[in-house]
Image 1 (cartoon, rainbow, N blue to C red):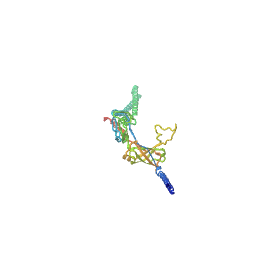
Image 2: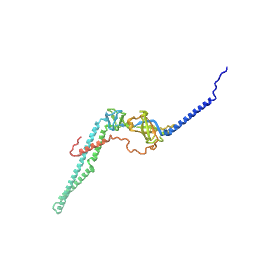
Image 3: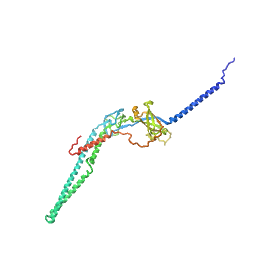
Image 4: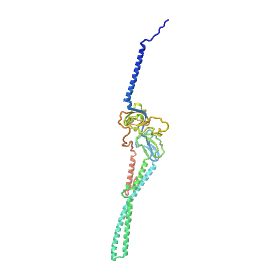
Length: 397
């Protein structure tokens, strides 16, 4: 019995080979296009941008520490509270400082009156000197008259001797008065009451006592949010004890840790795009490169790496780059210290320096909340000097 077997057509094999070649050619063309696209993207875009997700929000943490010892009687703010510059944060028991201030005021008033006495003593000695000089002139005249009379024999030699003794006594009195005047004048020469050393020393003591009293009230140096409060009511604090911190969240920045291989074309002033994990990619912050670190993170670590000892493995280092953010954007979308971010730097602009070329022309941060303390102390000193300099006037508090 005969069976029939299907045999492939002679044209089927060449057709399959052509399809395979077409697919391979298409795949090769696709690979070539992908490579050209990747090269074009790197040349036009990729090589002009550097990014890192090793970036975190940083900012000023203004520690509130006392300058004098004291017992806490009032706490004006707690963690998370908004405080304005000059607002009272802590109050110490002021009893001791008030007593010290009153004692300093009394010492200044006493010093002013004592110095007034020195000036009065000089005036008195000047009058005494004038009196002694008048007596000396009278004794000289008496001696001259008696000498003429003695030469003519009108008076006895003994009377002339007494006149000579009176003249010597008068001369000695003038010399003594002149010496006393010189000694007293040396204590007040080229001064007025307010510039006398005794008064200035008492004024300095009063100024210090005033500052100690003012420092029993701790105020916020800047506007910000309270964090890390550890102080409690009734706690006895010593100078330098950390009590709380104030963080101005409108002054935060980004510390982006770029690999050393990413820093070749990075310059100060280049534009930066920042996204925070808090808001996701929907919120973009515009910033600029503020500065590039002066060393790697490992170099400034508490225990720096010792690459000259033991086995050595090369590790790509990272350098912190500070990114300045717009205060308006921070106001609209506030950040907190320590939050994670993603930073991308546009490297097209190469005109800026890699390191700062000029020192700062003004202070980076300032506060004026303490400026009035010495001014008020000086006003108090001037009032006390005035009240105790006028004769017959009673000082009033």
